[in-house]
Image (cartoon, rainbow, N blue to C red; front, side, top):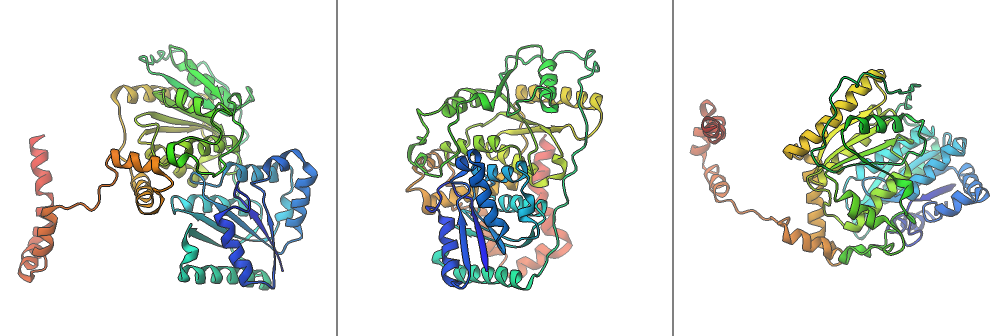
Length: 460
């Protein structure tokens, strides 16, 4: 049996993920594993269409496909994302049709589920037969139980291919509506919104000024009484995607420093803005690989927030309401940055007048929230995510990510274990049967739980 492995690491063979694949190869020597370094060779694949066709031929002549990748900023890396875009742009979907598919992903378990669900949905869009996914922590291979899990996963995949065991799709095809947004005169009676000296920055990857997203950007600009800066990502000198080299871990110095303009863009534009608007068009089930490159390259800051206290909104052209996974990624990104997500406005519902009003309200809220420093409380997405970062840095990564470690120490991230005397006292009290009997009678426990809150409310 021939199994093609689509390697999604920009490091090619020097990838932790590939060690898991090679482990499987050792355990199943009777099968051929053909590894294609599609992320590492993305520039060649873009420029040399014949070379791209050679790789697609390998896919077409395979019995099964393993999408193998490390996690990069809640998804796959931008290079892998670009390879997926090429599949659709060059119309080679048929090479993947009814191929059996599986996923091997490595990470520190930070939003590995969103990356896996993204590739899972791409498999459905390509009409593949998806079998299973294996998400490993980077050092799981040292664990005998994890090794056995990996062997079982691979065995199940191979058996499914051999016996042609089909599975149900989980994702319906995206429905893009044919709609041309045209700014109407419905906003002419609306009062222009003062920025109140707040710096508003709109960042986009759109190069088509006749597109819906450009027209939405123009409408938002016209809602304000003062000038609003718009930056196109293609006007920024970005030499390439994140290399995964982790040079930034020690002191936030990037391998691209002094070679392109990304650091200047992030530090002098993104960080200095009060209000950020990210504008883009849905491409497969994310934004473009250019946008992904920007998020990936921001990792030179490590695992620390750099957009603290900003009001952030998204302008989206395309069916984002059908992509819950992407909405979760946006929400988590903003929360982890300790910023506030104001809204996500798209062109998928209503007519042009409806969208005009949405955009005006969007612009008004951005400034109003910025004036009042409004921020919604973080949810599990941020609290859980930050704790995963914190614990991994403290336990095993601080040797490499010393910049993170210094930041976490300075700002009190290492707040464990918490010694709360009242909690310890209550723990011993509940060990006594008589105490439990009193607390469980007549809802006494519930009354005691709300008593401090009732006092606070009465004082308010």
